[in-house]
Length: 240
Ligand code: 6PG
Image 1 (cartoon, rainbow, N blue to C red):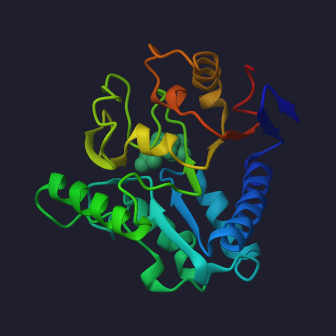
Image 2 (cartoon, helix red, strand yellow):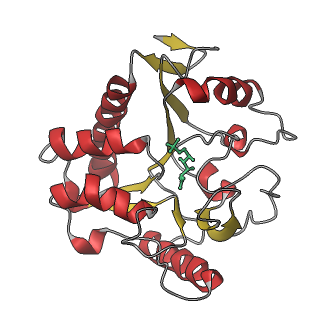
């Protein structure tokens, strides 16, 4: 069901399956038009269902040798830490698909100074895209309980870093230190998908959807604009 551009599915597996199908379609179009598909992955727990579907049902259906994988954000922990978004993607997707190692661009988290990591990742992206402000074909995002997305949190000045690619942020959740793509870079993408699931997100989802377009909104997720699609399950859509 589609309500105000929000695509509502009976449950998370169905919402994830729909997103996976659209990722495959967009990837084929990007590869046909530009020879490659650039995708930034989200972290947290919700996307595990999507990554499992991509690993299981699209192992051969997506041309992974022409896909470049990045992360929209990362917790500043070792890549084998249970909280690592790299580990989430490795365990649920990378270990199952035929993607060349050189096509996978994790956010580095070994330098004692996260600012160096953010700058390194920014340079990596600019070099991979050949653009000062990389244009992703697709960025996957989740929605936090406080309206955050990627690792952009309420209370942050989201506009001061408009000329940057990746920045260090501080989360009100553990692990606190994060690396995140900036809002400006997210809004520069050709497509953005949100995947949202669960009754606990129903309240914040409604507030975020209702404050879209409001420059003063305190919710970073409400500042995401462009070709944005919301794949949500019925539980998360309970209030809309
Ligand atoms: C992260 C994510 C973050 C996530 C939301 C939703 O690193 O935690 O990038 O933005 O998408 O917090 O997380 P859940 O899917 O676990 O609810």
